Image (tube, rainbow, N blue to C red; front, side):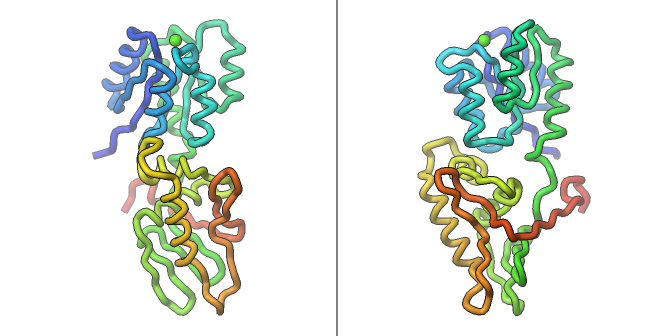
Length: 248
Ligand code: CA
């Protein structure tokens, strides 16, 4: 069975929110509701969220603030903003703030669902996962969860270590914040586990990935001050297109 996709609906008007929730559930999505910005941000940051529908005029924290905060920890999470008719400034501001698309109120369920499907289809989070990462003679096999060292030695990786590496690989070229790693790898709300736990896992990963004296030093995981962690620039990533197509 295909896993239901999780959509968070942040909308303070009860009638609109319920209509959206109904339409999404009928279409086979799992819908989570939030009636204000603070709750919406918290729900959006939970692990496993696939898309956020975000109203702009909200109590406690408006949609622009939610989007800004969300982009710090979840730069790639798809967000569709719900805007009022005629407010072109809001649409432009929302898209500049990192929204993926917008729907103008009042909208039909059909229109909304079409936008949701389109955004989910092109979501970068759903691109082919990286299955192998190599640097020189050393390879990380994400599927087997192990490091292949030069000379044939295999070092096992934990599920969490593999998840961290795959997450960093999915965003190669930019830093991934500790909060984002926490939310995506652990699937926890903010504050559930200290972000220091991430640092400990990174330290252990680096130890496992160090080539020893015989190997030239390759930087597998770079610390970006104030931002988080990034995969090293000299690594080669291999993706397996069959994985996303669901073939075995
Ligand atoms: Ca509103």
